[in-house]
Amino acid sequence: MKRLVIDTDTGVDDAQALLMAFAHPDVKVEAIMSVAGNVGVEKTTANVLKVLDVVGQDVPVYRGCDRALIHSLPDASDAHGNDGLGGADVSVSQRPIEQEHAVRALIRLANEHPGELTLVALGPLTNIALATRIDPDLPGKYKELVIMGGAVRGKGNTEIVTAEFNIFYDPDAAHIVFSEWPMLTMSDWEVTMNQGLTAAQFDELRTAPSPRGQFFRKITDRTVKRMAEFGRTTFLLPDPLAMAAVLDPDCVRHAEKRFVEVEVVGQHTRGQTTVDWYGFSGRTPNANIVIEYDMDRVFALLKAAVS
Picture 1 (cartoon, helix red, strand yellow):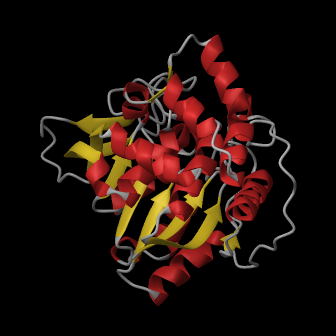
Picture 2: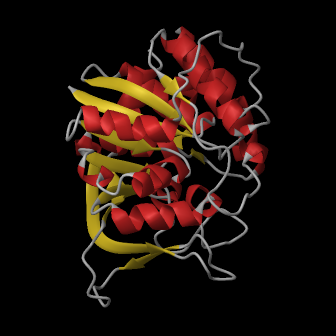
Picture 3: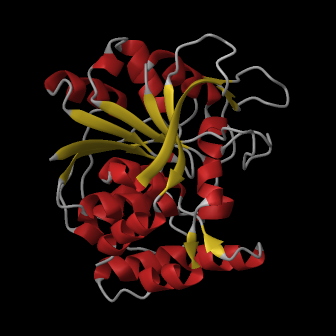
């Protein structure tokens, strides 16, 4: 049984990834931490509770950081809607949240279960960076860290054109995490762009008759419209791909261990993830970068998520 702690800025694709985790028979979600990113932390926290209502699971939820470590930046509500769930008008949950801050909870859980928990980061790395600064031994207490973030060849999706949103939102936090965690798994924006679902596959997920399928459809109506506006024929899965690497490691067809740094001072490159592809720096690799997924296996996980 794989035991997960999930740190998320719950937008549309984060919610999809959460559905995947709760549908997997050999996974237990131990806790969920919210963080600001796609929308503000009050909304990302509320969205976690909405997902829990859909899946009918009771999991402790901890509110995390409401801003980046140093510079606050615009959120991604233009892509995810003002509510973070595509403007789906999902009913507000009455579930409570824990009083403990997410940063403290990340440390406590690691100390209570050393070497047993996989940490999955689907949003900006603010909570994890602060926890690492408080407890420098934290990286050795989690079994592994898997993140959705970065653009390994500089093809980003933000106004800093070489930076991906999760890293761009809090580059200083990402710099801490990449510097202090000895080996994380990185599913980046470019593998997301290279591997998506066909319109037929996406429609199959959206027409699933279950409550989870109906929720999936509601939160992706905006996605369908945006993809049509951009003329795309495939549907992107940023956070579901990262979650797939956790749930079914055989989904990863090819990955490469490389040294990665996060640029924090560049006028035109702040938030860029720079990769030493050829070992010129002589630095020890700190990231296992996913290059290719088995999309049939990923699609199977998504179908299970909406069943």
